[in-house]
Image (cartoon, helix red, strand yellow):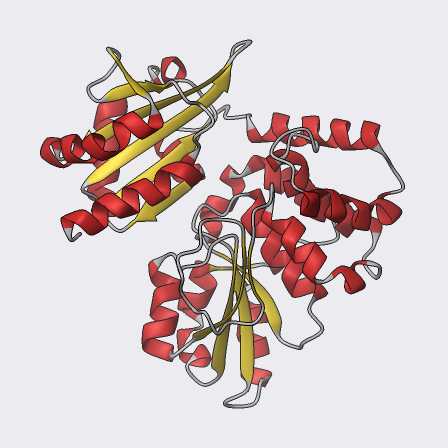
Length: 347
């Protein structure tokens, strides 16, 4: 995409507006597809999806790669962080607007640098996380509870959904399928409405939805051949000096690696105070586990604020390792607690 993106910028008149639609730092299925859906359905010109990771990290997201293979969109045509960095001088000649999907506060150094160095402004937000009260003049500014952010995007552009083709409809369905387990869990009315919008294009019903959900989950849970560093960056978000990696494996699975040494290297690479692994897996019962690594005093301080709310039960497997008695709490619930602790520490 670099050559195409660079060529596009060269052909845009100076001071013209280019809108980049970016998902959050984890670049999971919901973030990536929400950015693509918003860009595709928008009636404005020069609205482009920005995937908030380096291009080399995309293949780690095997569920998204699988879904993209069934769509009309080629991964090579997407814009990644390295494309932005390589086209910085050209971007400096245009006006950059940002739309945040699946988050409502900018994430990542490249996006923040677009704002601080090039004057990019956030003009739109569609999200289903806790409202952090930024960019209150953005339009649209939709922050609403939903199983999947893409549902909010589809409902916002419901009049445009009729013009997409069946392959795009399947892609747009993918986050909804994964995040709600095929419309069975954490489903809000807006998710049901989004599914109804896509149904005429899919020409399929519940059986297709379940089969597609199963295929995507199989791809997502396939971690064969991935190193510990791959797993750490596969679904990763950074909150100032705390990094949280979500993994669809157990601590027992991770024991094949030198976990503590791997975390120490990751802390150094990312310049963190604390690195956290959050695992989730099923063995007839759903489990979540956590490992904390880094500055012991800061870990103890953080645990003092989050251990009880998250129901963390100490485990003996690793120092500062825990099982969550309340496995309903995913990173989405953990992140605000981490942010609150960071604020209290002035970090």
